[in-house]
Length: 74
Image 1: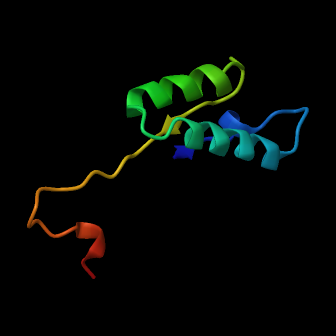
Image 2 (image 1 turned 90 degrees about the vertical axis):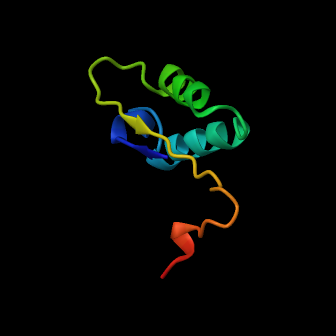
């Protein structure tokens, strides 16, 4: 998950609290399709029209059998 500060920053809480809330939400939605997770994050965290809010979610999927995992190649 990549995000701008507007997703996790709130004037009335410490930055760590916002990051923890986002991490817990992502963990709680494990296994859901990525569009559903993105919609939930935007709905929950991007309510202030005066702040920037951008979220990028990436899910790594397994490739076909016999195709080397690009992340494992040095």
